[in-house]
Structures are given as C-alpha cells and as structure tokens.
Length: 431
Image (tube, rainbow, N blue to C red):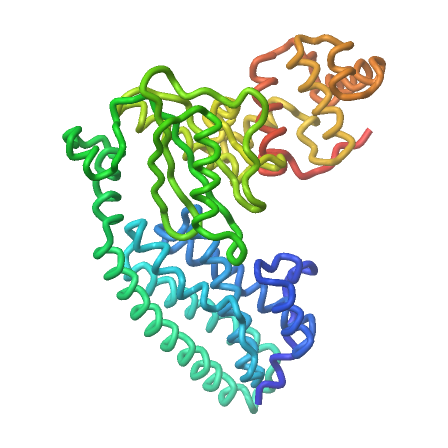
C-alpha cells in the first residue's frame, strides 16, 4: 500500500547533504527506498525543526535547538520508512528525542513545551505527506491512502508523546532530588540580579563570590562521542591555565557547562603561550575578568555572548574570547541590521566569492597593521605589490576610498571575517 512513498522527491537537489544524522542511517534508508524518498525525509526533518523553533521558541536556544534538529529528522525518517512499510527500519538517533527531557529539565523548560513540539511536528508531517499523496496517488486510491497516513502518523505521535511524558517525569524527579537543583536555583537568582546573602551563596555553591572571576561556557554539538566529564575537564584545564585557584563548574544539560574560576587577589590572566587544547568537538567561550558579584555576573554574560558569536562564526578556533570578539558581539546582536551594515559599508566587497574574499582579507590585514604594505605582506605571505594591488581593487569594489568612513569599514570587515556568509551578500561581483 505504501509504494507511492518511493516516488517522493525533495524540493532541493542537495537535500541529503543537509542531514544531521549519522551517514550510515541515511544511507540505509536510501538503500531501502532510494535517494528521492530519503532526501524528502531529510528535508521534512529540517522543516519540522524550523517549525518547532518558530512555534515553541523555548526550544530555540543553543544546546536544545540542535537536539530538536536531530530528533525532527530522526522522526521524519522513521515515519517515511513506516509509510513505505519498511517496518523493521530503526533510526538509532530517535532516542535523542527522549534524551531531551534530561537536557531541558535542568534549564527550566516545561513538559508542555516538549509535548507541544510533538504536536507541531505531527501537524506539519501530516500536511506534507497529504500534499504529496494528492499529487502521487491515483484518485481512486487516495482516500484509503490518506486514512492510512493519518493512522500511521497518529500512532507514531501517540507513542512518542507517551514516552516523552514518562521520560520527562523521571528526569524531573531526579533533578529535584539532586543537590544540583538547589545550587542552580541560587545561581540563577544571582545571575538575575537578585540578592543572595554571601554566606548562603558560599554554602550552596562552594565558591566565594567576593573574589576576582573569569567565566566560561564550554559545550559540544557532538551527540555521540563527547561526555559531560570531558566538558568539565576542558573547563578546569582552561581555568587552570588562567591561574585560577578555585572553580565553580555547573552542568547545564548533558552537552554544556557553565564555569567560573577565581583568584584571591588580582584578575585571572590569559595563558602566556597557547590555550589548552580541548577534546575534539569541544568549544570554549570566555568572558572578561571581573570582581565581586557584579564581575561574576558580567563575565558570564560576556561568555554567553562569545558563545553566540561562536555559533555563527566561520573561523576555525576552539576558544572564543570575548576580549577579541566584543565588537563583533555588539554589532551582531541584531543580525539583520548587521547584515545591512556590512553590505552598505563594503559594497562590492561584500561578495562571498573566493576572489573577493582574498581582497577583503588583505584589506582587513592592511588596516589592522596601520596601513603598512610591508607588514601586511609579511603576515599574508604575499608580495608587497600584491597587497597594493588588492587594496586598490578593494577601493574599486567598495566604490570609494578606504579613508572614507574608516572605522565603520574596519567594523564591517571584522564582521565579515568572523561571520562570513551570515552577513555577506549573495550576488557575485564581476569585472
């Protein structure tokens, strides 16, 4: 009865390349149903995640939204296989949906949001599948097929909702029974700006807020290989390298930790050589040192901002230091306005193509070293004449001299360098 499912085709040619599931899983479904249905399922999974984030914004935060995307695609593949009567096909990542409660409970997201996300996913899946059936199923068979679609998808939704509610209840009970709940409650009150007596803070957190602090956010997007203890070890190593003598490390779900390090006198310092290398897939965002409760809070907020930039950054680095990213963080708080600013200031230099990217990088380096051709050439490992030519080409593409609105120009170049296509244009520049 599900033969028409094998006629499904994705809207985009590169749908399979956008999968967030293990390659072997997608390849298995492709082997069973063909590239068309598999690509269609991957595309549906992405659409489900986008719809959930739009309608349940509580799940649209870093650390949870990635889980939503994995779960949305996993359920889409499982549903597509079920509709094609491949009943023995199993997506190993489907349990990621059920790992969700442990992640969201510790971050204060209620079960109602989780269950609503399942209803949103069900509604979109029914809409997409019925639209496809109307096009691919002969009129004489359409009613029977549509009834079957509703039965299969409703059954999946019911089972997933029951399991989600049950798992959330277990996770919630475990959280309330843990000492971490009390510590998190005190911590959240401090971060909200509430007054917590110093002696209570020390008893609950095991950490003296009167000292000089440095805050980190350490996270991973790896859903399989990285363990929570590795995140804590990475945070400890970075704080030790910054000469912190005491630490506070708080898990935030299973793939993220908030951390602080302190010194009794003087601010924590940056490593003299290089940062300790975190495990593969682990990244670190860092705030600026600060003193007392106010410094504890401000350093954490800066680390969160550095983390936000990290999720957009196109540069390969493991430690995102707010000290280096403060301008980019401030200018990208409204990404649409940042995009407009970059395109307005750079003009043709905002083209994302490789040739213009080389010109843009050269101009940034040239301005960063105080317009020294020799120093820029040495840093870029190119000839001095090459730098001069690219600077001239940059002025042509921009449509004005680089001396005009120099500070906005350098800010736009910094945004383009860090965020890439998120703020650059799309139409190639010719000539």
